[in-house]
Image 1: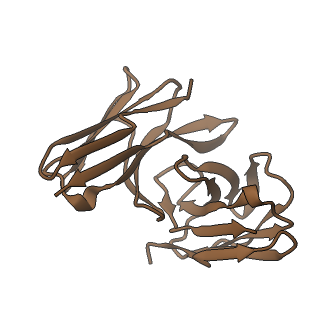
Image 2: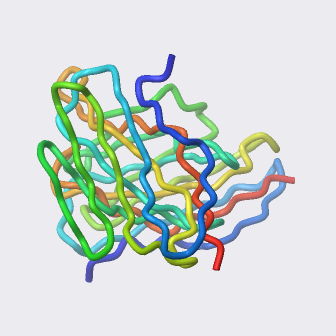
Length: 113
Length: 111
């Protein structure tokens, strides 16, 4: 298995909802990443997990809460989002933090209404 | 000024043409990545370079570390090559490495 799988592919949520995005990989990669991408812009790093520990938090608002329950799974919990949080959320993994290339998922397109 | 600059921002070419996309960066890096993103889709990693040249099918990537410059070439371009091509660099920051992305080059190949 050489993929990063993200679910759901599309998500519409209200500003009072709580939802979660899921990312899974079975390549034995020990670093996992969340990126946010607005239309026609490059991805922006949100969080990095290294060996299941949060190693980078790019000053992301607390309404985004990451979780890494095990080495294969990465979640992003969403609560009280704003319409400007609508974006493509990309997950990626790498064998070790920041080295040997990255594998990206196909993303979750989130719309906040 | 962005740490990673790409040119051109947009490129339209006829099928079969030789394509070159350029990337310049202004900081010390541990590696440079070329990525491909189709409309509305996820990102595919094409190359990771720390020196020299790599080739995969019709794609060739080169890097000149001294000049802080990389190029992505596509030979015999095809409409299915139409996508956004993104240059990204790995930068070390207090023991952590993270990717810094260029703004992308939108490539359209016309049949």
